[in-house]
Length: 465
Image 1 (tube, rainbow, N blue to C red):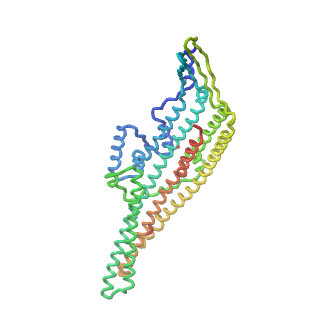
Image 2 (cartoon, one colour):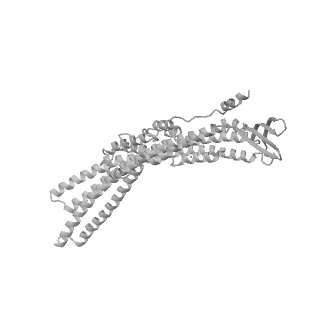
Image 3 (spheres, helix red, strand yellow):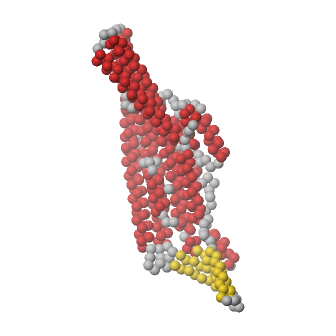
């Protein structure tokens, strides 16, 4: 019977083993369900080599928004560091499922010629019995780590997409402002020459020179904005060295879609998909399990049972058993239970707050998305065609000697400014669409992470023209 005690105890412990992928398949599934595919957790040298080859392949052609996202999901070192938290959480789960095992004790006492030996074997019964509750709590933390990794994956994808739109728009803006500068330079030079021969007032010549100086300053700002936007995209994709300097972007932003998304049931969709809402609910469940564990160990926090064997010189061997029960006379666990109850209610209110925020952020993001779409179409269908007709008419008047070269150059500047405004409206629309997707899937940056961190800490032993 004694021989079967330890196997029975080991069976009761019910140890959890490590999974093959460390829980990453759940992260991939959550990201794929929300429209983001291609994430990879690199854990071996051959996988790193394969990723490096894939990145070089994607960078060989002008970089699209989708390819930029693929590179970021494969190559961003910060995301890979966050994936490592999955392994840490799983290790904690496996450790929580393991029983500490028996404790062996040996003592040797001597009194004159007499020698006494005491041997003890203690079994942590309370630790064994509480394994299911501890495993459940750590399992919920592991699930929260999966959701946090999925949130980081989605957020990186959306941030990279926004950065790509910003970089392409900044590149276009720089080119258009270069055209404005060249037109202003030609106008200023012509005004200077005509003023020198007395055919142009000095005041008008000074105005043309001032406009040229202002265009030069705006071009310098646009170039710096282009560098900043490109570097943000470079950081998100995890590029450095020659790859950071050598990748190419398209010359223009894509046109907006023919139809806009409708707001029907977007709030309900956010409550189903948003990872911060799910993390808040998981936190509440985890703290509920921790509350049960606290109540179980309220009065008794140590129960040890042991087998004893004593030998003493000249005396018959002693055998028996010992039960050690620690009862806290001055602390009956009331404070610990009250703390756990308050933490649980705090988690419930956080979950409610997450739902309220989700609905509000979706409404706000959709309003910005719809406004940006309408503004983009207004520029595309009204302002830009109108400026084009004005330019054509101005060119006809110039050819018919009904307008001066200065009027023609001024019209060129205004046309370029209108086109530049349309480019900015396109950029704002695509970034607003990414913000709407973020509101539907991840929410406010860092919110889900704060929920997970709170759960882990609370549970008992995550420019202008």
